[in-house]
Image (tube, rainbow, N blue to C red; front, side, top):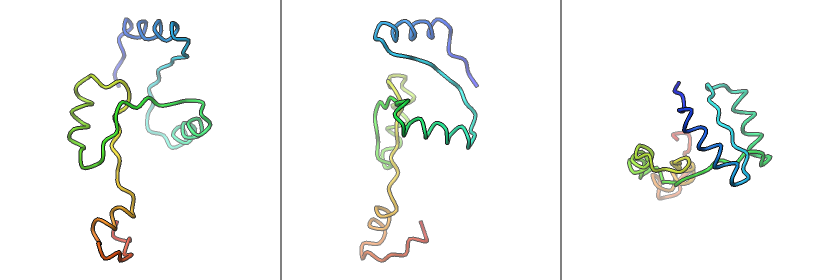
Length: 101
Protein backbone atom coordinates (compact mmCIF):
# COMPACT_ATOMS: atom_id res chain seq x y z
CA UNK A 1 0.00 0.00 0.00
CA UNK A 2 1.20 3.54 -0.64
CA UNK A 3 0.11 6.93 0.60
CA UNK A 4 -0.77 9.93 -1.51
CA UNK A 5 1.25 12.92 -0.21
CA UNK A 6 -0.90 15.26 1.90
CA UNK A 7 0.06 18.33 -0.16
CA UNK A 8 -1.06 16.56 -3.34
CA UNK A 9 -4.37 15.59 -1.72
CA UNK A 10 -5.01 19.21 -0.69
CA UNK A 11 -4.28 20.41 -4.23
CA UNK A 12 -6.71 17.90 -5.73
CA UNK A 13 -9.45 18.70 -3.20
CA UNK A 14 -9.03 22.46 -3.77
CA UNK A 15 -9.27 22.02 -7.56
CA UNK A 16 -12.34 19.79 -7.17
CA UNK A 17 -14.07 22.42 -5.00
CA UNK A 18 -13.31 25.10 -7.60
CA UNK A 19 -14.95 22.94 -10.26
CA UNK A 20 -17.90 21.99 -8.05
CA UNK A 21 -16.91 18.33 -8.09
CA UNK A 22 -17.17 15.88 -5.19
CA UNK A 23 -13.83 14.15 -4.82
CA UNK A 24 -12.75 11.27 -2.65
CA UNK A 25 -9.88 8.84 -2.80
CA UNK A 26 -9.87 5.32 -1.45
CA UNK A 27 -7.61 2.34 -1.23
CA UNK A 28 -9.08 -1.13 -1.20
CA UNK A 29 -7.99 -4.72 -1.05
CA UNK A 30 -9.39 -7.25 -3.55
CA UNK A 31 -12.68 -8.39 -2.08
CA UNK A 32 -15.58 -9.88 -4.04
CA UNK A 33 -18.21 -8.12 -1.92
CA UNK A 34 -16.59 -4.71 -2.34
CA UNK A 35 -16.11 -5.25 -6.07
CA UNK A 36 -19.78 -6.18 -6.39
CA UNK A 37 -20.80 -3.04 -4.51
CA UNK A 38 -18.57 -0.90 -6.74
CA UNK A 39 -20.09 -2.54 -9.84
CA UNK A 40 -23.57 -1.62 -8.55
CA UNK A 41 -22.47 2.00 -7.99
CA UNK A 42 -21.03 2.14 -11.52
CA UNK A 43 -24.22 0.69 -13.01
CA UNK A 44 -26.31 3.22 -11.08
CA UNK A 45 -24.13 6.09 -12.33
CA UNK A 46 -23.22 7.06 -8.75
CA UNK A 47 -19.51 6.93 -9.60
CA UNK A 48 -17.78 7.48 -12.91
CA UNK A 49 -14.28 6.28 -13.72
CA UNK A 50 -11.97 8.68 -15.50
CA UNK A 51 -10.35 6.95 -18.47
CA UNK A 52 -7.25 8.48 -20.01
CA UNK A 53 -6.84 6.13 -22.97
CA UNK A 54 -7.93 2.70 -24.18
CA UNK A 55 -5.62 0.30 -26.01
CA UNK A 56 -6.32 -2.98 -27.77
CA UNK A 57 -4.57 -5.95 -26.18
CA UNK A 58 -2.01 -6.07 -28.98
CA UNK A 59 -0.78 -2.61 -27.84
CA UNK A 60 -0.34 -3.54 -24.17
CA UNK A 61 3.29 -2.36 -24.23
CA UNK A 62 2.17 1.14 -25.27
CA UNK A 63 -0.48 1.11 -22.53
CA UNK A 64 2.15 0.20 -19.92
CA UNK A 65 4.43 2.97 -21.20
CA UNK A 66 1.57 5.49 -20.94
CA UNK A 67 0.78 4.37 -17.40
CA UNK A 68 4.42 4.48 -16.31
CA UNK A 69 4.96 7.91 -17.88
CA UNK A 70 3.04 9.68 -15.12
CA UNK A 71 1.16 11.72 -17.75
CA UNK A 72 -2.06 9.69 -17.73
CA UNK A 73 -5.04 11.69 -16.46
CA UNK A 74 -7.12 8.72 -15.40
CA UNK A 75 -7.07 4.99 -15.92
CA UNK A 76 -5.24 3.38 -18.81
CA UNK A 77 -7.44 0.56 -20.13
CA UNK A 78 -6.35 -2.50 -22.12
CA UNK A 79 -9.22 -4.07 -24.06
CA UNK A 80 -9.18 -7.85 -24.32
CA UNK A 81 -10.87 -9.50 -27.30
CA UNK A 82 -14.26 -11.10 -26.90
CA UNK A 83 -14.59 -14.84 -27.45
CA UNK A 84 -16.13 -14.27 -30.89
CA UNK A 85 -13.17 -12.12 -31.91
CA UNK A 86 -10.76 -14.81 -30.72
CA UNK A 87 -12.64 -17.49 -32.63
CA UNK A 88 -12.69 -15.38 -35.80
CA UNK A 89 -8.99 -14.66 -35.44
CA UNK A 90 -7.83 -18.22 -34.74
CA UNK A 91 -10.50 -20.12 -36.68
CA UNK A 92 -11.13 -18.26 -39.95
CA UNK A 93 -13.47 -21.05 -41.10
CA UNK A 94 -15.90 -19.99 -38.34
CA UNK A 95 -15.85 -23.32 -36.51
CA UNK A 96 -17.41 -23.04 -33.08
CA UNK A 97 -14.95 -24.87 -30.83
CA UNK A 98 -14.87 -22.14 -28.15
CA UNK A 99 -13.98 -24.54 -25.34
CA UNK A 100 -10.33 -23.79 -26.02
CA UNK A 101 -10.66 -20.09 -25.08
